[in-house]
Length: 159
Image 1 (cartoon, rainbow, N blue to C red):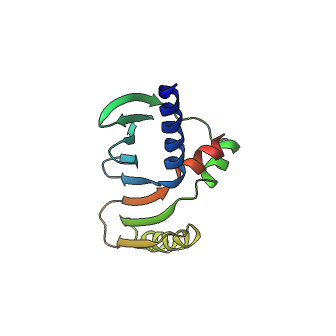
Image 2: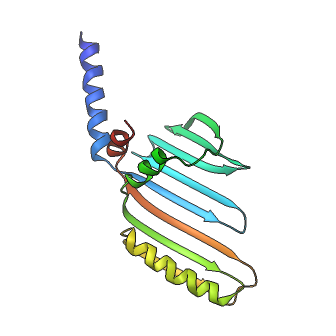
Image 3: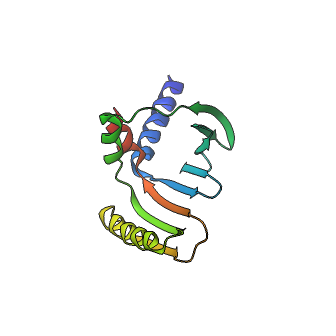
């Protein structure tokens, strides 16, 4: 009976933490190396999830207490209305974005600079640092972004 009470209390504590402690999301993209990393940390080092671009798909790695518990290759799927609704309902907070980009045509770089500023206003970004390169020899985009996300709210939207 005591074991059942401890398990129930642990489950309630886990659910409480899920709704109160926000997870941290880090996104890093480098077009020159065709490299993308998306990392989600919750109660670090308890849970860490990493999505890495691997060929035509994405590799999902899940770590529990720094031990890998899952490695799964995800194939790209068609965009559906349900996945679009999930993306709209994420509601990340404390978004910080650092961008470096350059295109061979300075006009395109200027358009990108304006577009990034406009999109940042729509997404309620707390800080945006841009470093446009108007004299680039080749096209490139480097993006580093961080945000916080409430996993409890996300799970409720998924259910």
